[in-house]
Length: 243
Image 1 (cartoon, helix red, strand yellow):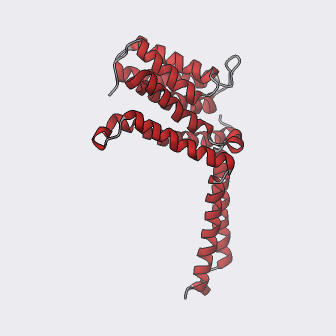
Image 2: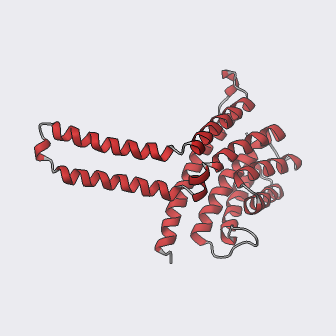
Image 3: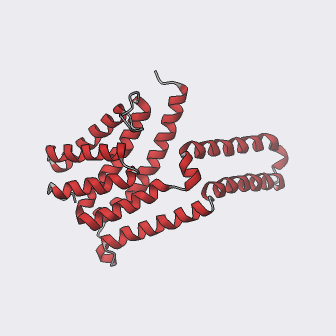
């Protein structure tokens, strides 16, 4: 039975990984949209993503403003709404204190949600995972060309499912790692299934999955290690290009 603490962890992790998947959609765009007609090569596209993420990272590290701006915007919006209601003809008929309490509860909920999504090191040092993911994919592209798609799929599927599996089922830690055996197995089962359905190559899919698991468990930063290592292995094994 899930404890309240584990349920809260699962909610926070699910939201964090939802953001991870949404952002990862940008990594798949060159494989579903012909950017060449717009004069944009795949290398240029991923270089621009890496540049944009790097700028955001530097801004946040020097001035951690993203969450602050959002919370300030909510506070300003609450005050503006209250002022507009008070000035309106129906202002006297609306319980202002009740409205204010409701809006403040909304602010508090958003603040708690942001705090649960952000990890401690992200508050201190910025969104390193997003930056490393962009750089990892760019390096994979430069080293392996179109085999980068294996790295993208791996970082989306394995990273997401292993994290959720770890929070939901995790009990046993892998040696010398923060990853759990249960989370690793969930991530591996998910990734090997997706890769096999896309390639019909069982041995290759298993090999890439094992590499992804080792990279996540023992790499310095999984968002950097997973795309680079899995793309390289796919190229060495000469697996079919997924298009």
